[in-house]
Image: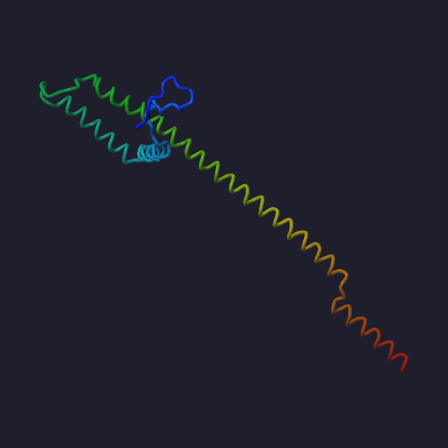
Length: 159
């Protein structure tokens, strides 16, 4: 149990409970992505269309005492507005998380491209060095031609 050290400067204060509720931003972000992914499907459009059609049909065709949202469908409009007011920020949050992932992927791709380019430049320098070294090496054809010329010279001298 924490002792109350009110007024004492030589003792640390007790921990305070935060005013704001605590939440895990990562799990909330994953939830937002799942919701945004669902909101972007044809299944959601079909479900929403069926829900609205049933709502409107019930409130037009049902007996008057069972109707809970008469013709202008104010309650339906309120519910759809509420759904849209939550859907828009969730979709934006999911897009921001995707943009962050894309940024990390682009950075990794850039590093891979830079590494590949450095390796390519190194290999190009090595090939150029090998070509330069090979130009100074005696080739088999050159050696044959020289030996043939020396053999011809020796035959001429022997005659």
